[in-house]
Image 1 (cartoon, helix red, strand yellow):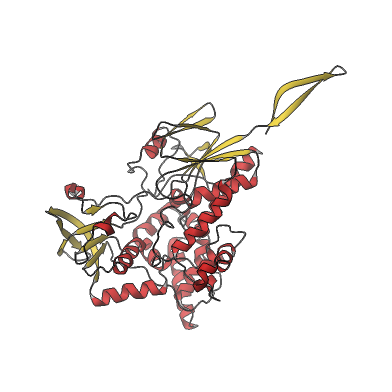
Image 2 (cartoon, one colour):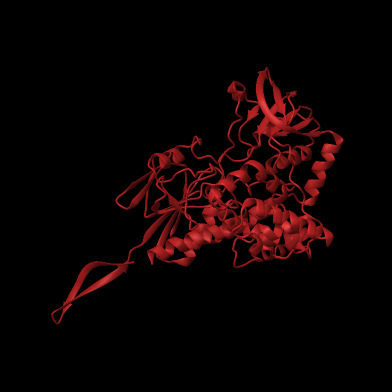
Length: 477
């Protein structure tokens, strides 16, 4: 935006002015994949913005997902879909094949391979390093705890009372810690042997090889933990409990594309969509095409289909279909899937369908009572350690985070009606409790789960990040 700054001189009775571009400041809270890639796009799209990136706890750009140092933690998405830039689909695989230190991963089929997340973290680290030298980018290593809005500006306050003034605010906070189990008596959760944060090494360091472990949850986080335990030589019993006892399925060995059938399900109700998918799974089977190919053909359009559902259909999906979709959608690399099945067959891993009903802390161990699914029986377990692997908390009205509470109290954001994030427009522009767009405030990633459903995988995040950057630069220009 051009602004008139001063009278420069008068020539022949005419007054001339000089103009300068007003440099806008954009503050991004969250330095994981979404926040850092958004910053990169902002700096690339305009030379007239400054970016302040607030990052706390996890390494810049890698976040919790790609900070792992363990080779057994694999990507759950094929490498060919993991480029940080949608317009450069081979950016990641080209980077890997150019690195002699990763020659053991130079497969002819690398685009369809599931590489260690640690390698992807190195890729992101090197990618971001190229842009961190930009003099218009400032990295602030602190935790944002409050935001004030006044006079067309945002003032972000960090835990050390540092104040950052900004014209635009982008929320890229990523995943919050899991919600605690809902117990009548939660006192046992204060035990040092209960671990509320599954994304630290504290648990592994304090575990003895022959102890028994309860992992609350049976999804991808649980799988990571089990694989790590086995790699560390753990010999004890591992229990996993979740309401339905579902485990992620594996990817198919056969890579076969299935025809797109978006037009058949776009704008349709949940029952019609579900029936169509089942029908196509059956058709695929008749042609010896794995069911995974059908899910993969739907996956890029999940956002479109989700946004076309009624509120009632969305609630029905969350109540009855979400876990089935999760099993089919969030799949495991074949090696990981095979290892989990082997552990179950050997009896070292036992997956239980049910809910943790009560918990007693006895000396250095626990007595856990699990109400089994579909029956009235209660199973009692004696375990030494418990880890909460239920996944990130997404109900913003229940989050015990100072920043979130501040934003809610000031009506700068509002929890979405599905209790899965915040309300926003498809552009990412946040909405207040009256469904009004909040000026110059945008959200990314998991915060938009209720709006778009699929918002947490790299193929979604990279598009989300670029779109938000384009929205901001477009509003300035």
